[in-house]
Image (cartoon, rainbow, N blue to C red):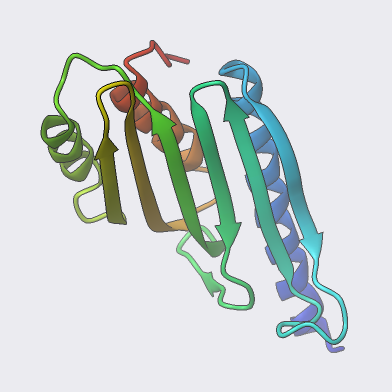
Length: 162
């Protein structure tokens, strides 16, 4: 491995470490249980010797998963590695707002920053909202915490201020 590759791996490692720290901080501040983390993929896996993120955060209202897309990293202007992420939310809600209003507000929030996919289901007893957010994680911007706080606040109606 040449020095350029080693430098790139070091930058990727720093970016993933920052992601893990941010996820752990937001989970703690919102009292969410957490599983998973960052790992180095092993030989024989599709993208050997690259980092992967796989987190699950949950409480009684629902679950959030974060997964990185392995092996597709690019340098950003801050000389850090961008990490393609998929963040999925699955929550029951009893917000006084209707589902369409919640969807519209969340879509407006993400506008051009992320791609959002929805599934909303309701019964007389339960309202369920699932969404997937695809975006590029940029270290040093605390974007994961902001996204989680905003979406949870919109869906569950609880105060998620830092």
